[in-house]
Structures are given as C-alpha cells and as structure tokens.
Image (cartoon, rainbow, N blue to C red; front, side, top):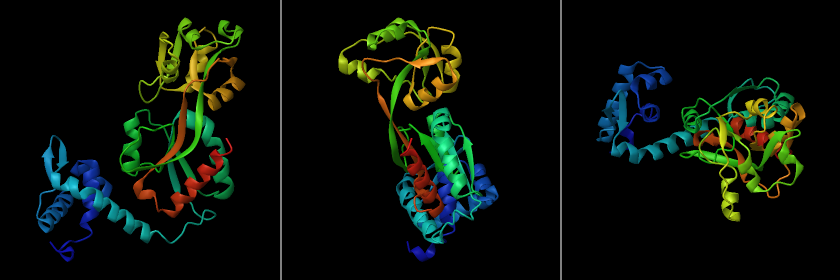
Length: 302
C-alpha cells in the first residue's frame, strides 16, 4: 500500500465511525449522509486492503485491523489539527465557547474562581457547564468532542485522556450543630454509631475504608441514604443525627450556609486528588492550553 493511494479526507470519517460505532450518528457529526459515510469507508477499505468495520447489532464494530491502526490514525490527525491551529488564541478578543463537565463539588468549590478569572481576562469567552453523574459519560463526552474539560476527582478516567493534578482534597465528616458526636473528639469507631448519608457519584468507594484498614478498625456504618449530590445532603443533616463525609473545601462552604459543623475527628479520612481532564486531541490547541493554565493557576490559590 502506498500513502499516495489514500485520500486523507477519509481518515476523519474513520475516526468518527470508530468513536460512534454507528453510521447514522457518525454521519450526523460529520454533516454527511449515511450513504456517503458508507462509501467513504468502502474507499478506505479498498485502499488499505483490509475490512475495517463489521455490523454489530444496531451499529458497527471495528475489526482487529481497525483496532491496530486506530491509535496511529488518531495521533496523526491530532498532530495535523494541532499544526493547523497554531494561529494563536487571543483571549481578549475570542468569543469561543468552552464546555466544562462539573460535579456539584466542582461547581461550588472550583467554578466561582474560574469564572471570575475568565471574565476578567476574556470577557467574550463563554463557559458552558454540564453535569454528568456516570463516570463513563465523562470519558465519552471528552472523546466525542462534546466537552473540553472535566473537573473534579476523576482518577478512573482512562483511554486517550490527559490529566493535571490541581490539589489534594481531604474528606471530613459533617453533622448538625449540637450533634452528640460533637461532644468528644470522635475516632473512626464513632462512625458506627450513627446512620450516614453517603454521597458517592461515581462508584462504591467509601472515604473511610482505607484509613480503617490501616488502623485495623472495623467500620460498618449504616447507610441510611445514598445520593449523587453533596448539595442536597445538608437538608437531611440539619434536622437528624445523620452524618456525612464530605470534601473539606466544600464542607467549609456548607457550614457557612447551614447549621452544620465538621466533626473534629481523631484521625483524618482519605484524601482525593482533584484534577482537570481533557482528551488527547486538545493537547496542542492554543485556546485549550490557555484555559487549562487559568484553571491551574486559580486552583493553586484555593
């Protein structure tokens, strides 16, 4: 096979079909008809001399050969796009829109300072904030170009995803003012005595597990309520004896607005790395680089 035999315009079609695994969705993203997408894949198959996709249910699946070449094709397209985008980014004049995926933690703790910085330096730039509660949604949104950045504690993101650690967040335990547990300096065993509101958007991880194991303490608190949002927890805590673990920076904000206090635990709970995450394709984008730098600088002061 000779590279001159391949129409390079066919490679973005391969990229999108590989990501979508569905010809109609790929056609919609590319602004083409489904028959045009099928024709492009046929031409690429003929040029390469290998089948690239096969029918699978309501969509298509990549062949073994497509899986082999996919990473190199994506990397080549990223380098080409990066080269073409090296025209610079003037934040003072740009009216570009960036889409951020944020949990309620990120919205409450990170976003106000980020918005203030962007508004000051790039008044025409628009930040669109979306919320995803399924960890898989984060990776898919970044991969499909539906979002530019994901912010928060998301160490599970895999695939062609870049990340930058912003800071370490410590978990603390929240209770209503006047809660019986506030009368002493409670240890981990105290957590067994009271029902818990468990906020865990992305899985079954419990913030006290690793610390309990290291100290040889059995911690099996009763989970009374399980939810995906921290911002609803104060309404349950303020009128009950429930406890809830919560990231420290968010806990400080919540105690300013609700009759809640942080339990003075005898030992700290687990820490979580807070970071920003983006797809490999955005690595060399000047506008994206500018936004990531603003996020990083702002978060160093939080």
